[in-house]
Image 1: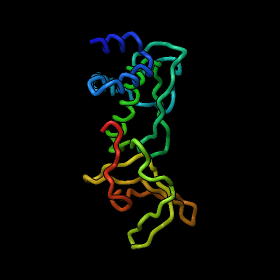
Image 2: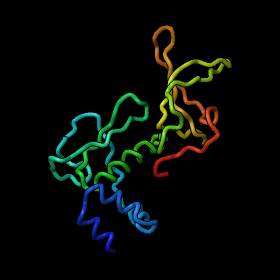
Image 3: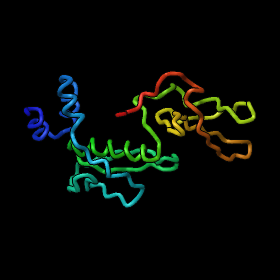
Image 4: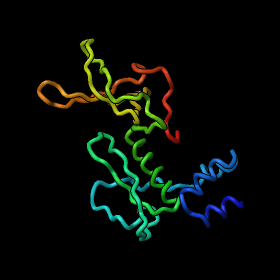
Length: 174
């Protein structure tokens, strides 16, 4: 009860993060708060002073930025600094990714983006990967990999995560 009152009165994201580490019960209370997960990001016509969650006007708005599912563009959710709006924006971005079978990791699954990509003919190609995202295809975790061929054309491929590691993926807010 007291935590709820404090979070309603002190609306900054710092209070939200502090409340999560006070105790397991406080973390449970904070984690089970209702978040708006329906405010998906936009690429254009962004209004930088209007919160996409509560729709209030504020000069202190910030943005939560995340990749589109095909990694061709960044999407942006404008939100005010209140913890409920900020976390709703984060949860919306994660929900948007999940709807495209794209999941954000708590930490990169490897340190470098350079990776050997297995090819269908049995050879491998030096390329790159997205280290902070995984895709779920046919019940299997996959890494988004890409490379440029000799004709300077870019190619991409989803490679099973099991090809690179046996560790379970550290999915953010799974």
